[in-house]
Length: 100
Image (tube, rainbow, N blue to C red):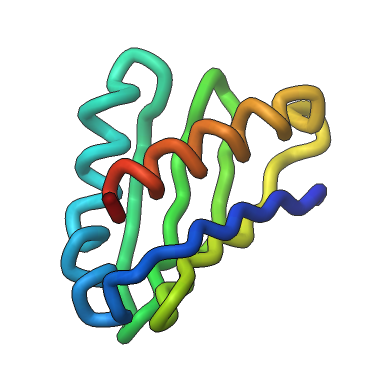
C-alpha cells in the first residue's frame, strides 16, 4: 500500500495539542459526512490510530502528537494513489484548524 504523510507544527505543547485533537475523529466524521463512512479512532497515549472509508477506499494511519509538531502517517490503497495530494491536503487543513 502506498504511504502518505503530513506534518503540522504547533506551539501548544503535547498535552494541549492532544486535548485539541481529542475529538478529531468526530470532527472529520461530521465535516465530511457525505464523503466518509466507517470512521474509527483510538488513542494510546499521544498516538491516535485511525481508519476511514471514503468513496469505497479505506485509509488508515496514525497521528503522533509531539511537543512542537503533529505527524500523520497513513496508508492508502493503490486505487486511491491518484488522490494522494488531495488526501494529504485535506488532513493537513483539518489538523491545522484543530491546532490553531
